[in-house]
Length: 196
Image 1: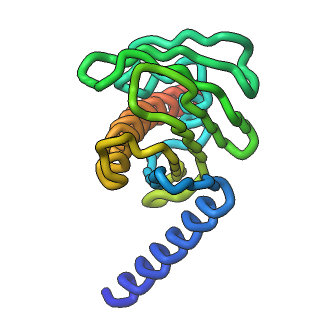
Image 2 (image 1 turned 60 degrees about the vertical axis):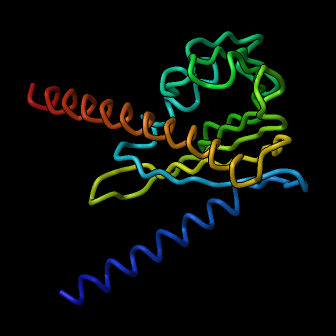
């Protein structure tokens, strides 16, 4: 039993080391004095190609982001493209204007910047990256999302980070739920095809 605990501990250390390396390599933000930043990690039991098929859709973030009701893209799907996002009621905003900063289909990295809207997330920038991993002997995806944002007047850095982290955690949970459901459908379809 102790040998298994040692192996698990070694695997956890290796996973943490990989996460730190991905964060160092892909999640660079220049933090100014009145800003806060954080990085969140989610392990999803679905292959990268399934998760990426949702994340890369700058034109359809509502596919997995539960607080978005509608999205209208202005321009082609290229760096600098702007989208107007309608936010569902219950949040302290109704719309957000966001610009595509990076869309890398090879490295599975998406970066956006908020450039307008009726909310308090000024100078918000985020990076989300996907990395293949093994979860309980199955193909999975390590999702890392980081952000930087101004701290609004009247709020603390902790309050601001807590609010943004809560939104991202909801988005990542939804992304995991949808991706894992799609992965099960994909596996079921594949097994049916293999039997024929």
